[in-house]
Image (tube, rainbow, N blue to C red; front, side, top):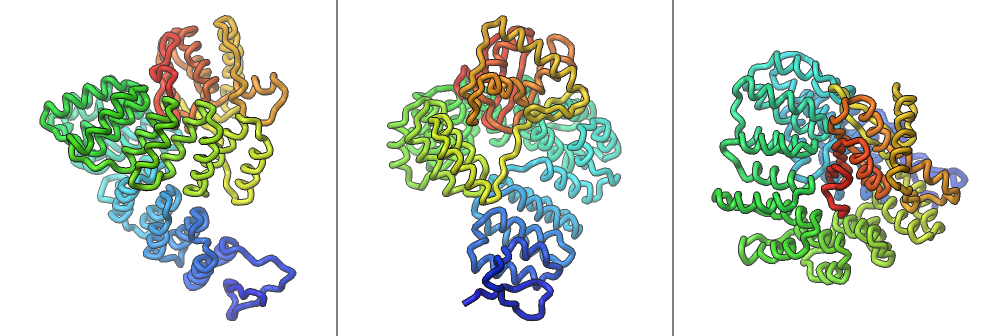
Length: 543
């Protein structure tokens, strides 16, 4: 029997002829103009199991949240039903409440995002700051929209100067610092810190934690430590922010020392503290220390290990190439590994060329995160490294069929208060000619230093060696660093944010460039910070 499909605007169900394809729920949703029509599509999505697809469910939530005839309660129900946290859906829900002038609710939803470990993006902060300006603050400037667009420091200063001090701290200070941390805009963060000092605003535990977090995520540990020391009443969050900042910036031993200071101050560490400590051990290659802390969780600190702790241990063992112990640990876990754990194991397998376990981890990851592009890319990379190009093509075909797209690698650098973004092979920047001239100079210096391109990092089915080398030379972080060299004075630290994991070829290049140009180069990729100085990296080539 031919299935019956409900078409929006039709008074009665219309049967779909067998010789025509059945409209998908999403295509039907695009035709909806009324709430009752969207509810019919919603019912169809439930019936056809489309609600388990993150993208489809998020688009339904978007209709409910922002359309003229939507329903915010329905939008929130759909968003909460999405099993894997997805930033787009939460952003849509916050935007919908802003549209209805529900500013307190919008901020409350941001808090819920944090509790559910949903990673905010620049649009999240744009909406949250807009909500803050709706809570009685003077001026109607959308602070963050202008800032996110071009890093306009004058706009930040204008709004700050117009607001009462209590509002600066209560509503703007902390959200702006969080946004700056996310956007890697250190100059603006330093200005806000200077503003706080100039006006004698007390750095309490909340503001102190935000400052420490901002400096840490911008790769400025000296500033983070200054803010930490200025915080007179340190809460557990303040200590955790500093320990976590040291861990992510490759200063693992200092993170462990700070834990001792924390305990001496009579502040009891919690589960988050030890997630940071285990992360520090993992990134520092401190296997014995990490296992020792993990063993003390229950016996000494009376903390029941959770998924985050087990995930850190698996990451610790995987990075060290101890895959037998990884599998042993996974068997002893009282819970099933989550997507983050499989992803870290897959990355470790890529580093150590463990194809068998890497393939298994990749397939498990896709089961848990079927709509996450990174799952497919990592598995594709594993197959590519093993020269299994048929499998690579199969993975990519699956992505296309599911409508999953990989965002391009993007690197940003802040110069004179403006944030400049680059993608691989970028030629749209106004200084492109100067940038590519600098790339040629960099390549010449690298050649003198004995650099040889690591073409194994070009995980594409490309046979021509010179094409592979050109692809490596135009990676986005190299373009950003080249722009930094031509735009700043000699000796100035270059700070770059990259939205994906840096390849080993770029890593080797940055070490040599830091020595050739006598510059400190700091790159924050999706995994951690890399501080390059005098030919070496803070990660000790272990990331």
